Length: 285
Ligand code: PAF
Image 1 (cartoon, protein in one colour):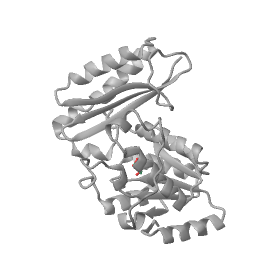
Image 2: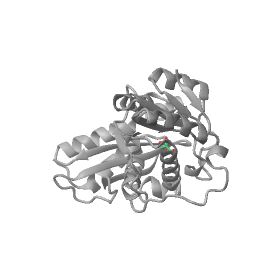
Image 3: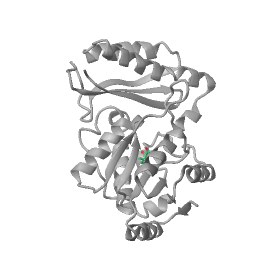
């Protein structure tokens, strides 16, 4: 049965017990409102860990003042049941006061990798993410931690933080999980109206177009960006935040793509007040 823990002292105690029995700890950090994407992370965690720990914490540090922290969807009972049926052993669900009992003065910021794309559109976002993830890593001390590739820049930021700070955890990237029509699973999809939801499939359709262009030998990043922008702009409710082609995981802007390059084609598009992201990671052949 799943055990729900709300304090840092208690989760440390439980994890200490597991460690003394030489158990491998797999960790799935989330902000809750779980969907099949999160559950696929749990499944991956179960494959290589003895104990699966999930955190549910809507982290105020990673939301800007005009963003959706207060209206971010929350349903703890539903999440608890889903986590339990997916095979989570320990659910760490602290309050904001437990995580940040005083104004936080120590933060983690990852230069360069965190600066373009979402870092540009959401100032302070990745500092909030890196800080909470570093804090959670210190609390849980997992052997493995699982992150979805939908947040490809977040994944690059965390991988770089773990390398730079020698945090003893193996980061396991997990593939994007999609709805039947291609829309990437996201807790924020519930905000979409029926019409926005329909038009939002343009993100996936344009990434498929990018895949096709790359497979057909297109090597000019500007051409890919332009085609994708045109496709997205054809949807009347879509407002582009960015359409980017960058080297991955450095996040350096790409111009001409060369054999062996790993590139990230990344999109952020708003439908009404809902901002969606999606991406494609590809190695140039
Ligand atoms: O990807 C998320 O849900 C969050 O950014 C994370 C990693 C749980 C940190 O709050």
